[in-house]
Amino acid sequence: MAAGRGFLLLLFTAAVLVGLASASPFISDSVFQGSAGSTGRSLLQAKKSCPMNFEFQNYTIITSQCKGPKFPAKECCGSFKEFACPFNTYINDESNDCASTMFSYINLYGKYPPGLFAHECREGKEGLSCDGVPQREVVASSGQRAQGSLLALITLVCVSLLFH
Image 1: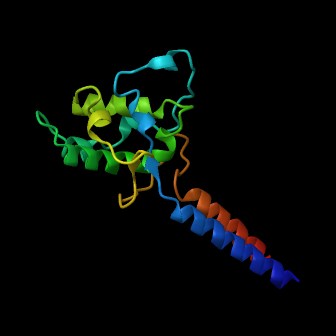
Image 2 (image 1 turned 120 degrees about the vertical axis):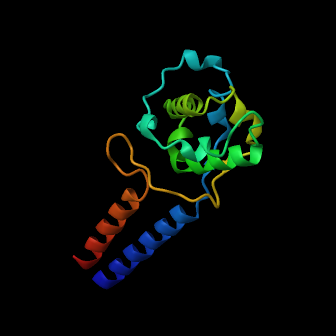
């Protein structure tokens, strides 16, 4: 009986991990609304503070490749995706101010024209695909690991339940 329960738990854990790994991340088109200069109703809607500290991120990924005066779309969008995809969970969350904060720092360090990325970087109806973009681990302001720590915790708990 215990072996059967352990096998089911292991099977469930594997299914969860496969489901999480196979989800294709996107950067929603809605993240560009703040960067394009349109505020709409957002002035009336209070947003939570971003759990990420974008002030100290490394923006050279973008600023070294996306340069004016022509701002080539291929280089600008590719470098933008490389920078932003690891943060897609945070910047796609419309209840916080992560997207506008991130764009404020991108524009501060790169001195880009307003709406550059919103106008140049278009892909599918879901937004910019992060498939094939190298993922790196990001650390939230609270010190928690944004990616990987939840999976590690789930795996640790399931393994301990399996052998306990």
